[in-house]
Length: 149
Image (cartoon, rainbow, N blue to C red; front, side, top):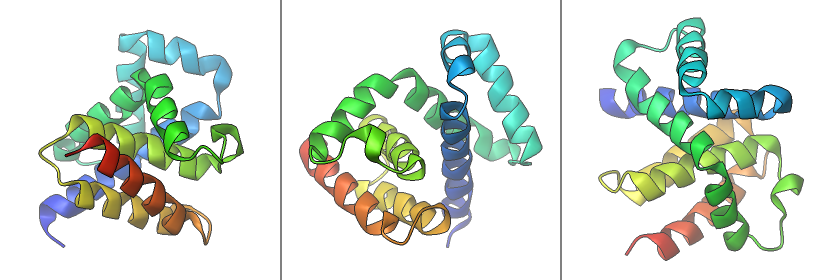
């Protein structure tokens, strides 16, 4: 794995962890997301705690902040791709991995969709259940075919 791929994977993991943690704190979620200064403080605290290298923080921050900011739109994209599964019924790990990856697919056209999907699948193997990688792959493959020419 190249240095850049490893860096990006750690950044994606950090972004996922932030979304996952904040989803578990619904009382704070809206306050954090609606206040850019507070969100930046949360990101900095998380990065420092998990010792995310400085060079990876910008990508991680963009993924996390963007996915949080556009969560409703991203959730609609995911829901449209998997109409048989309501988001509330998906495992929290899967739901938040999808949110980060969908943000990346829709906002980073310079990153090949196959790379984004593969990285999300690898994180699903690390954090999800046994069926998470296949589920993540299927959803993201469908979304990438619909959203990217």
